[in-house]
Structures are given as structure tokens and as C-alpha cells.
Amino acid sequence: GEDVEQSLFLSVREGDSSVINCTYTDSSSTYLYWYKQEPGAGLQLLTYIFSNMDMKQDQRLTVLLNKKDKHLSLRIADTQTGDSAIYFCAERPRNTGFQKLVFGTGTRLLVSP
Amino acid sequence: EAQVTQNPRYLITVTGKKLTVTCSQNMNHEYMSWYRQDPGLGLRQIYYSMNVEVTDKGDVPEGYKVSRKEKRNFPLILESPSPNQTSLYFCASSLGGGLQETQYFGPGTRLLVL
Image 1: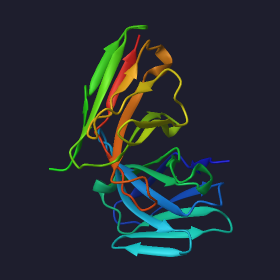
Image 2: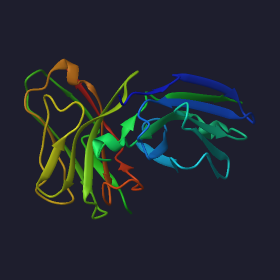
Image 3: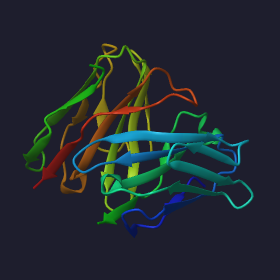
């Protein structure tokens, strides 16, 4: 299957860390992605990780990949109000010939002052 | 400025009245794609195109048509819209369909079918 699941909602206070989780079912996926959607806008690629990596860090963003459990997470350090958005994880399953980008349901992050 | 544009941004129509949503990119990208976004379902791919005159179905192609006569344009056609096609639609493009390719998304078209 190609289902990618996320929790729908996360609320944090400004300055805290946020952790957004994602589970996927297709172990053949080679790349996994995190996209951000701000209100009224399209999706913007935040970061991606190759399946042979466990962790990738990019400034305030840390991506952790647990291939055994098919679990992907995005940690945002020192969360700011400008980080409020919907975050989507996505994968490119090998069994689709890498032609399809399969998205999760999205997690709405609300950052309060 | 590199961008993907969609028109219209908002559209209200009635059941059965044919409509077209245009998508254009100025980055000379080969790969273009249409998605619909619905609450609780995330983004689902409707159609994609690897290059001019090359299109293929995504996950939810029923009720939609596309064409790719030019590299920069990838219109989405609803021949006979129905209320279940009320949704937020996104066009996206990337240089190729490869694993590391970044997809650039348009701003979205919100469609309401009455």
C-alpha cells in the first residue's frame, strides 16, 4: 500500500520544539519529503531525506527516519509564529516507478505566542 | 521570477458546465502535475505529464482531462463538473520526474461546483 499517515493537528508555544510525525507503508520508497503549506499558498519543499540516512539536519529542521518502523519525523527547533502552517510528508514509492509523489494527510501546526 | 501560475484562483460554477483551469510555468520544466487537496485526504494526484504530448493518470483521474501541447502549459479540463469535484487544485512542475527533483507548486485554484 501507499498510505502515508499523519496526525491532523499540533499546537505548541513559541520557542518550544515541534515534532511532526509521519508513517508510511511502502518500504521501497527511496526519498521522503517534507513540504510546508502556508495559508492561501501552494506547497513549498522544506527538506528531503534519502532512505539510507537516519537523520538530516538543516538549520532549525531535523528529519529523523526509522526505516524499520517506517516512521519519519520533522523536528522544528525554537518554533516561531511564522512556522504556523500545514506540513505534509510525502514519498516516491519505487513501485510507482518513482513517478508518483504520495502525500500524507497533512499536520496543521499552530504556534501561539 | 521562476514561478507556476494558475488561473483562475477562485471559481464558482454549476454542474455540467465545462471549465478549464490553466497552468503555466516559466522554468522550462519537463514534468508537470495536477493535484487536488481535500480536508483529511491530503493531496492526491490527478494527472501528470513527463513532457509534451506525454500524459498519464494519477490516483484520481475520473472526471478530468489534461493536455500538454506546449512545454510550459498544462491545462486541467473538467468536461462536466460535478459537486464532488469541489476542491482546491494545485498545479506543480519540476525539471524532471526524478527522485531529487523539487516540485514547484502554483498558488492553487479553489473550485466550487454547485
